[in-house]
Length: 405
Ligand SMILES: [Zn+2]
Image 1 (cartoon, helix red, strand yellow):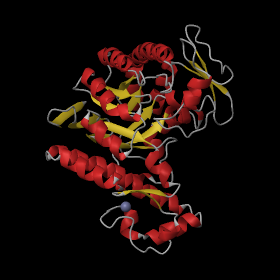
Image 2 (image 1 turned 120 degrees about the vertical axis):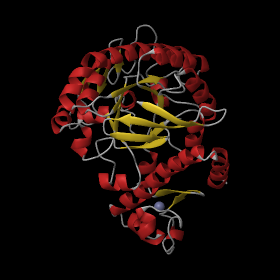
Image 3 (image 1 turned 45 degrees about the vertical axis):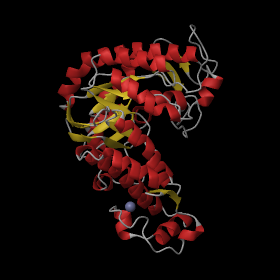
Image 4 (image 1 turned 90 degrees about the horizontal axis):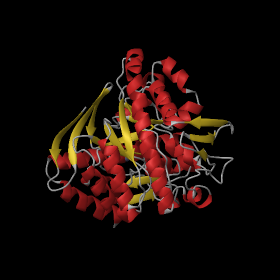
């Protein structure tokens, strides 16, 4: 259940609370990604201590390894990974279409999957991919290859929901088809229409099995529908109208955007979706995007960026990102940020962190991930507070000026 506490004047932004079986998520919120039932290099205690409210696991990865049956036996995702809070799983759609096609794991929401559209998915009514060996789409679902051992698997909307019911997260997503922003209009339209039919099937399957799931785990999962349509305004609007009419508990906004178009797209999509329901923006989490998203009605975000860049030595600061591996930091005994209250900044210097990265110590990833996640999670908390205090625009201007100067 979603409760709106306060709205941003003349805009779609709001402060709210989403109540899940494993706790309340105060929104807007940044959801930390724990793809394979672990936030890379961090313990659940560290994730909790830095202020994160919820963790998002990935259906595709957890299905392949260890298998959703094992997670179900363990008592669900949060018991399995010892996370005492709400969890999400995404539908697996994004990974099926990116990893399944063997394009590696470095996708990014603004550039990802160019390859997919260029190579494989410019297909029409036959729904037959040129990449038949890697990803095959038909009306029923998608055949793909495991990124672990190359074995073949078939996901349907029903299968994705069945897996997510087994994993037992508090919030799950309808199965969708992810298409590149560079895909042609006709293909984007076709994929979007298929996503709508898959959304209905996801919803039907979940409604028919919800009771069973509730009885077996004592858990009532919330199912979110996903709006697609890529960079095309008419498709995004159509998708928001159609998905918005379906009886989902909340909505995810997926696919890729042109960076310039994020503001406008989120505004008209969220304006069309039911206002009283929660909206999650999938896979986006750069500081400027967080402000844009929240201003335009996004209630939660998830993104691998904070931990992924942390592992390469890139750290967020109020004045933009820094690369801690640079020579100039090797004798810098100041903190990453003087006023940062994270465990890393409270206890370690730039020189120490720089050394850990050069020496390739595993602890480097842990300390860098703690700082970056703290930075993003608390930025979203500060934005939330600024809406409550009616100081959103002041914070936005001040923050973005410093960060991008
Ligand atoms: Zn810090």
